[in-house]
Length: 595
Image (cartoon, rainbow, N blue to C red; front, side, top):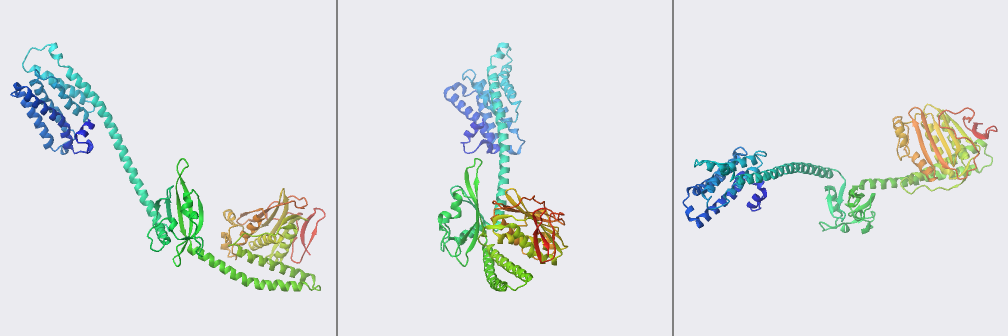
């Protein structure tokens, strides 16, 4: 029915989108047109029927009802009031059928129009078809009662075909109409849900655009073909900055992008967007955009966007302006280079004069031992200066030789003795008599010096500091344990980061830059080993190094467990300097003793 009425509306608009008046008129129009055509045919072919009052009344009532469809403001009346029109349509159909019964057959079938209207309206989902049947039955039976002719079963059943047939039509239309109503309700519900989702999506899109325009990072989203999908305000400014003079817009190949501040052009195939189109994901790639004095340094990252099947459907790139950071790093490097030069000169002089003094064979033993400590610490200080420079440069280089790790440990303990005495810290060594492995003894000495220095520094109340050395399978384990202030476990996880200092260290105002342990980890890892930190507040700290043995000539000895308290009989406390070493016959282990 809706499709027929939509066709009658010339398919310009859906029937349900029309005004109520137009819908009522279109529903009445099929009966009106059919009645006008039928009456015109009767007047043209059946001249005796021209003066039949019933035919004339049928036409007049149909015209009147059609006029009511136009004149009555149906949208102001209760919805469903328009059903009075199809009910009244049975009056002209009855008159027209009775007036042409002997001449024109099948006029009663015109009752299908109001029946279809009633059942297709959806206002009477259960009663429409029975009501149409009763009205059709009245259409064929009422005229039989008017002349007061004698009624018979044959007379009453003869016209029942039309009501029964229209009942079937009405039921069919009613079922279809109810189904369409349900579908229409479902579609309206889905349409409402879709509108709600569209509203939510539009709101999220506005929120996303606002967030992207708020952040101080350029964001660019491209599809799999490299076409821009999204670009925030910050990225628009970066894009405009990179354009050649006089160009208002351009592709990435046109942008002024450079590899460095010297203006080396960035090859087209290495440009960020093209790499992202190829499906590459990368992070923190530095690119110089534009030209001085407005040139900016950008840290570019990209991530590939994939669909549910894993196919690439685009990429998202971020452009972070790190110009000030790069300038600060350059200033830091320049500062370090200057400081390094200023430090190397006096250190070289110290080193030279200690060598000259050490050439005097008449020097007493303690003086010569002190000169060796001075010389060694001058070397360590030179190494520290170089390491400070390397924090922003290449990785540390090792000079591997076959060296006795126990001797390296003893030298570091001896060098730390004076400072330990001043801090009232007792040093203990638990090690075999000899343990040879391929390593850089200077670098490992630097590691031990740093760990011992920290252990003494962070033991403000004194207490023991123990160094344990023992083979452990295919590796050699070195532990430096103290009973100092300790730190939180979460701080211990980050203690090897550059410039990191624990909260306890900061609160206690103990001086330091937080660089030493970063160098320690780098040296250990360059040896192919590992280092970990175990600590708890108030319980001390244990640093454990694991170095590859590499066929070391170590005497067998059990690995000592970590802890801050020395074990009686395993090692002897180191007293005040000067020091000497000896091997205990009973255990074969080397201990450091006061002389």
